[in-house]
Amino acid sequence: MPDEPDLRTDRPHSARVYNYIVGGSVNFPADRETAAKALEGWPGLRTSMLANRACMRRMARHFAGLGVRQFLDVGAGIPASPNLHEVVQETAPDARVLYVDNDPVVLAHARALLTSTPEGRTAYVQADMRSPDALFGDPVLHETLDLTRPVALTVIAMLQFVEDAQTLVDALVAPLAPGSHVALTVPTGD
Image (tube, rainbow, N blue to C red; front, side, top):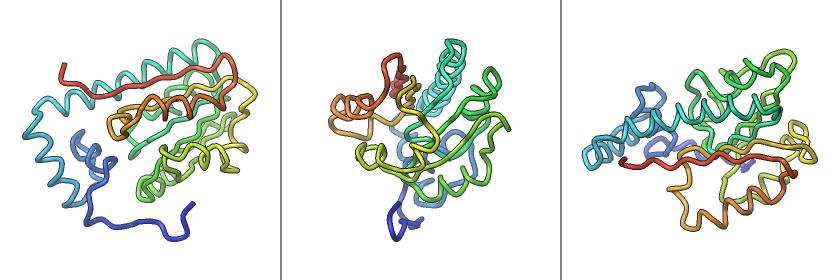
């Protein structure tokens, strides 16, 4: 975790812009201004973002139904129920979920709002998805997930923010055990 987290709210952050567009309340004027411009240029953006969340829930249910009990949610965003751990722990109460985001505001809300079932575990790491080595070196990740067993990696509506998505995905998948699954979405105008 950085020594001094960036708590600046005068600059937009993708998680808070997303939160505003889907009707959340954890956002600031800079986020709302950016959201307004985005919606002006893409009126269907809200629908696309809601479809991405619905897709995450379907994929999480599917992976839990396949027997996956470990989930790594990269780019978790501001909590919005039903969250990934709620979906998977409904099917598998012993599931372990690690949420990752680089925004300290997101992590503060996650720690306050996202609680696991007694049988499972929910944990949080402040990390930047563009630094997979730092993420996979974090002790909380290793306390939460057993990387010798299959993991479902979810990267929902995040890859549009990186230049070389394939290289990033390769780096995120490389440490995962055989039998792991990956769920990726990118908002589109379709």
